[in-house]
Image (cartoon, rainbow, N blue to C red; front, side, top):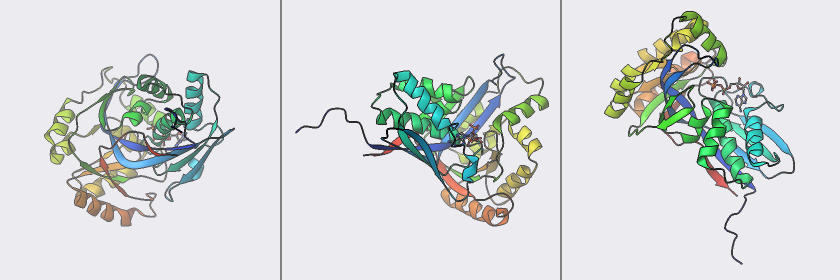
Length: 314
Ligand code: ATP
């Protein structure tokens, strides 16, 4: 008997990466309240996995890495995965059915867009589970409704983000860049950091700072040059709200990182290193002193890596 051309799976597992912002230029808030951004995203090798299984009901469950407090992830119906499923189901006129299990390694509220990664993973997994065959264009449109970082979580790689970050253009990036990630056990609220940006910079230009220098540095494939051009307009407000972050950056740089910077709205600090070996050495040096000081883990990851992609289809 020949197999049908299009089979619907019983379980689909999708892996989606954390992101860091190599450039985060922020402009004055638009009339709709969003801040215009010129940002360069990079997907790095730290992932959440999301498994969606066939079911006659709907559920979302979670297993988290030991450095993540599972209580920080809402599971009572207001997970971003619930919203992603609602949106996709409504788009196709389908019922929202499935058991979704998130295996979380991306720190929560860390400026690494872990929730956005889960939303992107849910769109891809449920599209396959429901046999919905959503076009890439429609998936990107649904992703943009879920959050500014979600379209990038679908695309991965290195990309330029404009608008409020949801208009994403892939960039050619032939580098392999090595990062140390130092998350913090206390998360930060992205809206609060933006509000603090508005307080600190009431005269911000409506046009966010351009990423041109960063783009040229990426093309040069020179990590020293890239380190010099890393830029984050949310770093000053993040430091103001969390003065401890400045010391983390200083320590990583003293230990040999080319440059440390706050990731997105923080509080994760990310360090660009000259090589994999350098990154491991910086991570080892940061790990000891930070344990017990609200920094539960130090991770090494390289980028760019792929966006949300299927890793199991049964
Ligand atoms: P962003 O910079 O996109 O705001 P972030 O990395 O700082 O992202 P997230 O980990 O995405 O922050 O979490 C932000 C908030 O979203 C959390 O505090 C949590 O209450 C809520 N949330 C909803 N669903 C999820 C999810 N699947 N994973 C993590 N957080 C979630």
